[in-house]
Amino acid sequence: MTVFHRAALAALTLLAAPALFAPAAMAEDEHTKLAIPGITIGFITRYIADDEGMWKKQGLDVQILDIAGIGSMNAVIAGSVDFSMSSGPSITRAWAKGQHLVALATAINQSDEDIVIRKEIAEAGHFDPKAPLKERGKLLKGLTIAVGGVAAIPDVVLKVVQIQAGLSRDSVTATPMQPPEYMAAFQRKAIDGFVSGPPFIQQAVVAGTGVVLSDSAKGEPVEYSPQSAGLLLTRGDFCAGHRSICEKMVHGIVEAAKFLHEHRAESIAVAKKHFGSYSDEVLAQSIDMLTAMTPSPPLTTPQMLENGDLINIAAGFLKDSDKLSDYKPLIDNQFTK
Image (cartoon, rainbow, N blue to C red; front, top):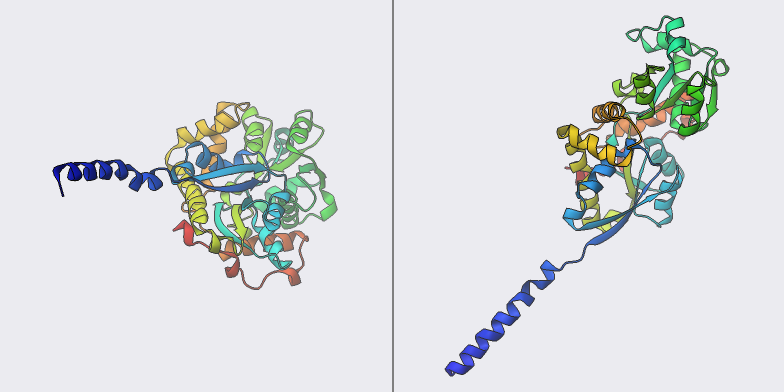
């Protein structure tokens, strides 16, 4: 080979070298869709994972869709989205109907639903926050309490607390209302209280108008703690064919849960970005409550799912015969480890 030929070959090799590495450098992101049942700070891990680039850094482009209520899970069942964040009772009811979904991560391990009553009612009833819940629950007698919907998780919690307090089902009026409605009604004293999660609890507490009667951050009612909420789920056969997407999706939630525990100020800043209409104190207290209920890593246990069914049975919204006998098949924790 002549000097000319050797030089030409070297030049061609140099020109080709970048092409050898081009596929890795220019690898396209994987794409997926995540359905969220409501725009609420309770899904803080979803906001952290997105805002802090925890999915993007792995090469996963996540399109987040707001699909109200049970519609988010139904979208997974229909195949129009790959993932949703739902509740434990939602997935167990789906299994009971032959719709085999799988729990990949539990972002909140309590009901995330507190009972709040007006402060003057609490004071008139000599409310003692240190008393057993069954004693505190007696203050509910004769009250009108807003819940998100009949047989929804807030209604379930309310029914169980009043039953534990020895009150009949009709001794408390549960009225279905959404947050903007019940917060306005609470302010003008048209209702006596509400059952909800952050930041609405904190709004009433910070304003000095409300008192927390039942505290989910403490696991109340404790007989049904822990529970699975903010539950990341997908179809039972999805991860087998899309393992990389499942790994990246769950890893984002794992990292977000860790971030929430280790970076309080930054987590509050994420909340402020999306829920800036609330005061700094309301957001700070909301983040503290959510941190207390966020497991790290966000593992799902059979007990969490079973407790969701048990509290529904206790509230009278589920028959014993409809309870699942085994919850292990519903859970896949391999990506949270």
